Length: 141
Image (cartoon, rainbow, N blue to C red; front, side, top):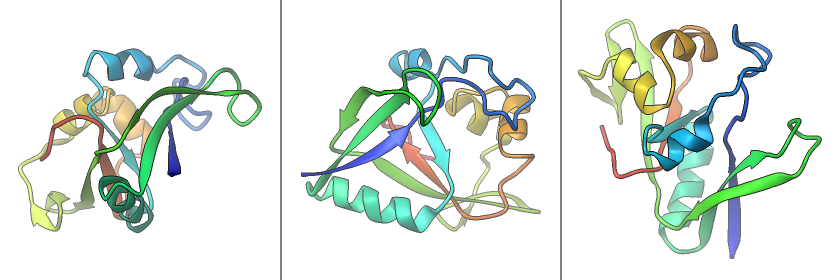
């Protein structure tokens, strides 16, 4: 069976103001504080999630043991059912699955395991391309 890998950051990236600090995403996932992750390339992730949900693949959620790309990957868990939603930012606000939404940045950031400021720094304010919300819980917007 095909396996798609989803890496979860152990530390804030070098482009972030908190670079090198622990994200605590692993703990936040297990305590259901981090309910989703947001990724670029919606179409690619939509294809992968469709493959997973049709039983042709699984999603392996992993973290680097040490330095990214220079250390072993550790599987945190795997899933055979995953949600995906399309996320766009416009001057009018957040659009989910091409529909206007009352979703605010504070809620989106919280469910991604980040403060609103860390979220803005992570995405350099707001994403300009269509993003994928990969739902690792039952939450749907």
